Length: 444
Ligand SMILES: NC(=O)c1ccc[n+]([C@@H]2O[C@H](COP(=O)([O-])OP(=O)(O)OC[C@H]3O[C@@H](n4cnc5c(N)ncnc54)[C@H](O)[C@@H]3O)[C@@H](O)[C@H]2O)c1
Image (cartoon, rainbow, N blue to C red; front, side, top):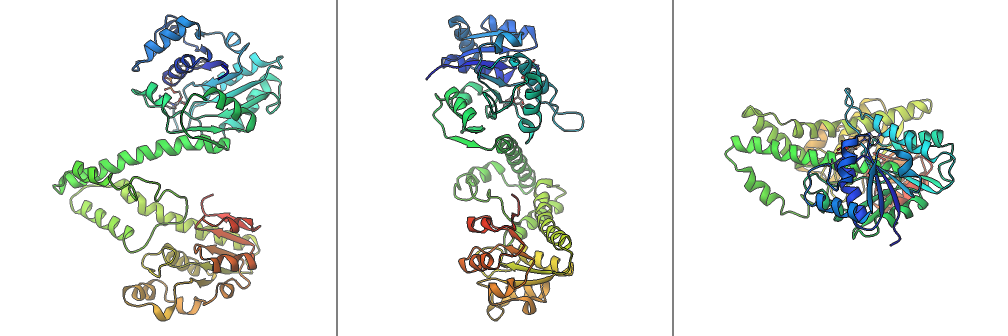
């Protein structure tokens, strides 16, 4: 590994762990902080935060000369190949992200780079909202340095996933290395973190910024979900520890990639019914379950959003062609179970909004519907007989919008042949659809 000269900004939790660990791996690190006591601490070989192993790592790195700290930005930048920004991005009073520290660092780096033609990559390691690197870092850096990003000066996003208390261990064994960058800066980051034995994912900068929020939001959701269920189970005399100990053993559905693919709303004969049942039990026992309540609200909101998008698309085109083809009606591909299908709810909503809805589902035929399934349709979608078509091409004939949730090849071929002006992909599993000019994803 060829060592890099690293200027690292912000010697707090993330910065001090990163500085110490990169220096231990042989890179030459100069840490910069506006707080002179933190700078002094590092130069005396003492970590600025309490983290297992960190004092020893920083002490050794300072002794060997691979780590040094300063308050002077120019001193850190003059020979640096890479700047790593690890400053705080705290909550503003309104809940937004305060980027004051980040802006100041970028301005400092830009001014220090002005007049130099030395190649340099500025990497944001702090957690920042999607768009920050492109809309804040890049222009500020160009303005203050007088250089153009993309010509020997690069920007990148590389989110940090370490947890306090196990920062060093997490640094050396991250779940993955996420690099949001173009090819050249991505190569620099691969070189910087080349010693890590983990999956490297190079993605769009905005995606890299967003992954960190998705991770933290999911962690928060998991804790809130578990504790919310525990509050209910406790009053039902169930030990939630036993429940969750068994729950996590299911690696196929519970702790797995299942249910984490962006797509359309959930439905069917179990999920809505059983969530409602838990909410009822909670109400009967004076327990409030806002997270679980939120799942139903959020699900309904998604159906409404799609209906609003369809109406907007029809209106934008002048409103004369109100034909909408809904391809796929059951709640899941290859089943004819229509109970609580979000597609039924969507059809009902669109018909209510005065659209000419034409439905096709390869496995749903009126003559085969029976029992609870038929009763559900009769109650929720009494017009189904009239609007159900045997062939996808019939439903698509002259349609302005196609809503595609079926993934059957018959349906996909028909959509591609008809190529309606607007195609909303509700499933997200068919790349062929994306070739259509009117393609848009439900959540992408
Ligand atoms: N703490 C964590 O476990 C963790 C984990 C992953 C990501 N993050 C993210 O990393 C970022 C840093 O978090 P942290 O907990 O290390 O913050 P922190 O508050 O511990 O450290 C930030 C440091 O930046 C310094 N600083 C502020 N302005 C500066 C400037 N202009 N120049 C140089 N230094 C400056 C501060 O003096 C401070 O030492 C945040 O965006 C955070 O969300 C934190």
